[in-house]
Image (cartoon, rainbow, N blue to C red; front, side, top):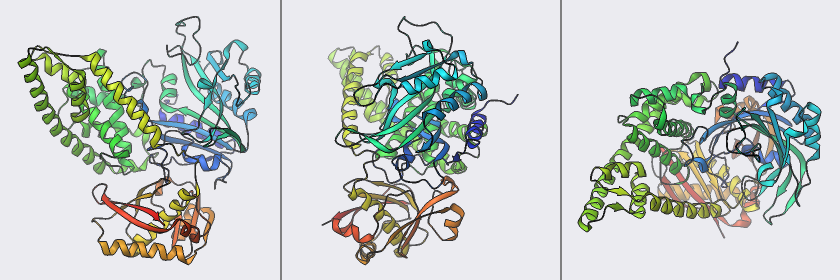
Length: 598
């Protein structure tokens, strides 16, 4: 019998839906293209928002994919048996084509016939209804028709059975979730699917996207009804392999074995938590690095730095040797049974491992400074005759030097001192509350909130790239972009800072194209044909067979999802495009900021 690896799961999922008319969409980059509402792709539907809103997709109305995702809200939760930062999400989509009548029977068939989960262990939840949308009797009826009895169908409220939008605005709708009963006893008479006790494990989610939440907070019917599903590869494989712990599955075993070997101790007891954190965070770091992000103190680079440094802190607790991040990273890349062929960007092995090693070295120097700072605090405590370090001081060490409370407590014990852990947790929670408040303001624009000014900036990035290639070199290639209502940010490959003269030349060339009123044309074509025409496509391994190409006069030709203006003259109403700031964003990579100035 064929071994049920992550590769096997992907293959049978794709085969099932291809036989039902679905086209495979390659996983998008972790960094959202031209979208300021999130730092990373966090769900399979994230790259498909324009098509869920009604824009035609080049591959048609039925799609299937495995999308790499990264969720930063789970960083602190990692260390248990099932939370992860980077993960893979299988999904199939109907863009205004089939709906509940097809999606639910297919879900039942795939789970029970292909994956062979016993039908009697399947429990489902459906939306109970509220003032926005009615009780989902249709989904409940369809589940009864395929054989799920009434006692295993649960009507749950919005907080359990409503998905989206990802941000403050965008497509959303009621969902129906599927759970496998593990056979464990109920933790209480009220135990049901969604309970965290471990009796019921979620395996799949069918989202029926038929609403759009707009900036006024109200919900409106979408122009088309969509199906959006999500099946986590890690969690499903855990169920298929009948493991109590995600990290015991075939996805993780080579990585865990490497950490265990370096630590000189087995994956058991209290040592499991730091090993899980190291495995999870360094796997996530490898994939972020593979998408061109480098450690920094801003945005994606900050998240990457935090993941690497948190893993190194845990390595200190395990007594791992210096340089371990490179060896664990190599184990991630060598995990060919799970990732080979799916993520060709992992072929940048040496660049990825060198970046890991360099960040580890930088952080170890920071840790040494932290130890000196802790020694000063210890001396002050002893001079005052006190025995306990405050939570505020410990949090300063945690935030500034990356010292986890366990390391602080360990150092304090050497001098027969202790840490006020409760005070530390209170200080940490206060900081996290401030961070959450800041994040809500940072990402308020929403995935689908494509206002005219943001659309203008998106078109301007195409003009900027074309101008840079003409003024500097045709070897310039886009490394990333970020667009808000106020400005655009563009990352590109180039070995040095631009001179003032070059900045002005690029500016002038862009604004000439705006003044010229160039027509912006949208065409769909095979990817191979787009390359013959010379369309720029720098994420070469991430494009489907058919793509959308935008042509701006004879000045720019790029593979892109949009949205864009119809004519560059539309940009003139916002003013002149000005390049107002440049900076380095890694070796051989520059970053430019531009805004319209009226």
